[in-house]
Amino acid sequence: MEENIIKFEDMQLSKKVLNAVKDMGFEEPSPIQAKTIPLALEGHDVIGQAQTGTGKTAAFGIPTIEQIDEKNKYIQALVLTPTRELAIQIAEEFNKIGKYKKVKTLPVYGGQMIDRQIRALRFGVKIVVGTPGRLIDHIRRNTIKLDHVKTLILDEADEMLDMGFIEDIEEIMSNLAQKEDRQTLLFSATMPAPIEKLARKYMNDPKKVMISREQITVPSVDQLYFETRDKFEGLCRVLDIEDSGKYIIFCRTKKNVDDLQASLQVRGYMVGSLHGDMSQAQRDRVMRRFREGKLEILIATDVAARGIDIDDISHVINFDIPQDPESYVHRIGRTGRAGRTGIAVTFIEPKEYRQLKSIERMTKSRMIRGELPTPADVIERQREAIKERLLKTLNNNTYADYHMIISDIANEGYDYVDIAAAALQLSIEGVKEKDDKPLDERFENTGGAPGMVRLFLNIGRKQGIRPQDIVRSFASEVDIPGSIIGVINIYDKFTFVEVPKDIAEKVISVMHRNTIKGYKLNIEPAKGKEDNKK
Ligand SMILES: Nc1ncnc2c1ncn2[C@@H]1O[C@H](COP(=O)(O)OP(=O)(O)OP(=O)(O)O)[C@@H](O)[C@H]1O
Ligand SMILES: [Mg+2]
Image (cartoon, rainbow, N blue to C red; front, side, top):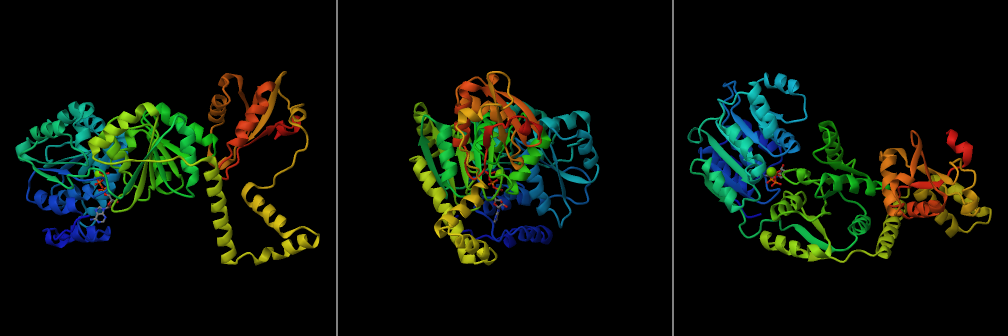
């Protein structure tokens, strides 16, 4: 980040706002804040363009909250955002900035009970952050009155003024003061020229502030691409080669998101997904779990591409190449925020190479061609990771309680290396039974219909995998229609599937091959009546 001479203290901010900003841990303004806060405080309209993760929210939030009149009981500022998650996030940041001044900001978005919002609106809300659709709903019902709004903010302005939103935005604007009597602030990391031209029509002699003309993407994000005919296999290897991380994976369509989620779950990854066909409760839950680190992988459509601020995302993966350069910039901007580093990986099929080059050209960035890790690399890396963990345990020296067991076993004549290896297997895979019977014999008496074999599938409870997703995915892996495989029974975590006898072996071997990352997806021939009773 470039040097700023100006400090928050130099900005004509009230003590209340200044202290709140300090409480948030902001020591110095970021470049976009240094340039736009004074302009906005002077009452100018502003178009602010700066890279992802550089503090645009506070750049418009601080002056907006500073200018709120606490004694005026009406809504005085309106922020429009393209997605619900972003509305919630911005409202949270505004409430932090406004905490001492007691300026209340309310997010208003679709999918949430409108009655609840109407009730909340009665309690002295000064700023509303919303998605256009739900706002229009409120305006038409007369539950939100905007005639005292003096400040209008479009975050992700280029997206808001794009075709999909423009009519809604115009309808909302028609309820506000004329552009001469209001302050309009537009922010985004990207601002295509035609959109900026359109934007100026709604603004009053705006000041344009542009940070970093040369580079639209964040320099601290390493950008890679992989060209492959099997993106899924490539993705798994990329995920497996890292010992830890927090990943957001973008797909082009909702269906691709669902399919990828099912495939990754079958392979034992902890994944959640986010897209527009989910209920708001599901969306909130997955975002919460991802923020809290309970989910290591979030698969999403572009609904998560803009504005979302989660500070420890290590990798952004474009499983499907973005449709336009703006989408690329915003997607990869979910990592490397506020000066941190990050890795952005884009998968392409050979025919998409030109599209990749055009993204590079238009974003003035460079993606390095990567070599996919080989399966041997992955195994080597996992071995390393196990070694690291084992060495750490050794160095921590907290295992004295187990000495006795080991010496007992050694006294019985077992070799120390064998004991250690067995202990390691036990800690990673649990007790493994050796089954000497040939598979064919084990297929007898599994309790299936004639010609069918009944398999027992141990999914493990914590992964929350839907058995039907597993069935669907492995059906496609073994190249047979999912309809041949039936899910028989689910008792909490016990699931049985029935498959034709001639493919049973194949199904088992595919499932075993797919046991990854320490999560077991055990599948084995059911043991007849006994198992079915569980
Ligand atoms: N002055 C500051 N000092 C330290 N951290 C800051 C400062 N301003 C903002 N941040 C932090 O930087 C992170 C990114 O900020 P923000 O979400 O506003 O970025 P943005 O520019 O809006 O990015 P995007 O284009 O992706 O929406 C946030 O976690 C925020 O708390
Ligand atoms: Mg933002």
